[in-house]
Image (cartoon, rainbow, N blue to C red):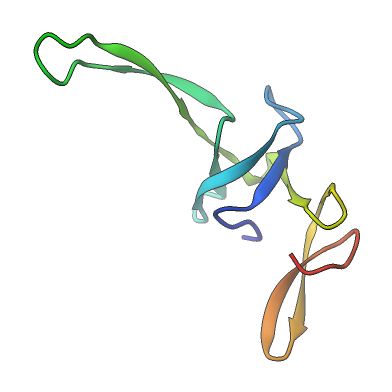
Length: 101
């Protein structure tokens, strides 16, 4: 998978289309990611202590990798990711500006 935790992405499809956010967690086996503030789900939480009220919390749900593009900070656009070998290291590059990510 070409995306990693901490990358800035742009959502290209779905109800949150156009949002720019950070990746919180990656699930490579399922090809899904957890993105901050995107694909929010409501979860009903029970009170933990007596006298405390229960509440409804918004939590991000996992979404497919195919619905996002990596946002390149160098060129300021969403682009596909490529790979290049540099001195025995495999680095990710932006397909638009050819700069290292």
